[in-house]
Image (cartoon, rainbow, N blue to C red; front, side, top):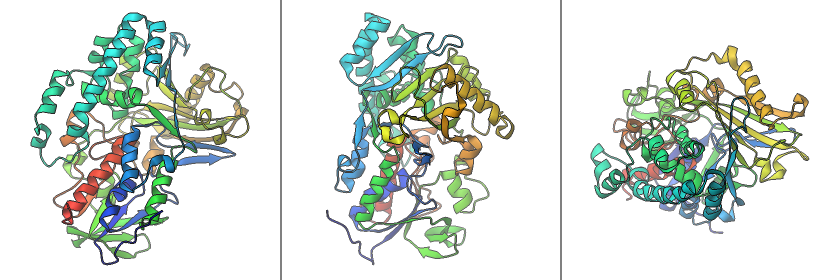
Length: 512
């Protein structure tokens, strides 16, 4: 395997943070021969893509759903490698098992398995919802592919220098208009399906972007495409294997990765103004660099690394996505119900729940939740015959009306009760052998603005050219690669953000 030895006199780049955005940026810059140093405060790479290990159980503590393998391949391809040589990827046959509640019964309205095989999915819908909706799924999946093809290159996988770039070239925008992509997402999905369970199943993904399906535009159906059409994968060993693998190749290519090294400030030519000149570390050491790429959220970068009293207005005014109450548990008892790797439990209230969560800043009365069981695909992640459990309930971010210091215990107990009704947890609390709870205050302590791991929401005027830019003309030589900048939230999008930051960097250094 070839390794790169960068010229010691080459232009130098500091990447602050070893999350997926920072790692992607490094991967897309290696071939240019720059001296690249990644500074990571934690003892491991990955950022949000970390793991909880306790008492024989291993559970991812960040992203749990891996989609859009071609984007992941792009990162490895930039390094001259293939993802399959570093990751043991399992393609899930059942992408999700969706369960629909009726009152207190989480299975009262039945279940639908989202299948990776299109023909099998058509038959699943035919058997549960009837031939009309089965035929509608064929048309809907074709619609999603057309939407993705029109949207990805034009609005996701590119840098924007002005709002006019949004319309150049004009043909993709015209195609999106013809596809009705600026109608409300719930309305678009409802036009295809009569079974309201399918409407929920193919529109809830907008919540990943921090927007209710009743408010989200149809362009966000691209998330549905990524999530339920393009395929879902799981790397054996857990999602954290992705940053570990990228880091391994980067090291082989000569990138210096310094874990356990915290950057406390970004240095500039005139104190608090001018171009970046390097970074200062927690021990007081100063190191010079030509470019700094921040993998931290934009608001955190301005406040903590640049010393701004508050972020620029264009960032400070942004609304943030809802947060999550995340329970990571190792249970010696397997779930008592039929489960898949990913399981969604839809509450029986729908539109009202989004009003409570997003508009009122309250917990949803009938919450829809995600339960991922990584040991389903990799038994080595659990002890003995037990199960590793990743259980997520959407909750308001810290702008909401929940006092987590006083209400955390009650929220956790209620969530566990719902998991017992669903037979995910047994009735014996002693079956839980490992446990970690993460609430919005914990997310905030981990450096996530407003206590949400989902960053700035994707309402229309916070997306595409309206989203915080990955550069700032007032801070030459600084670029951003994270969920808070273009193109946005989610593993694929954050990997793209790294590539876009790398593109900006090469232009700044005169290497187009």
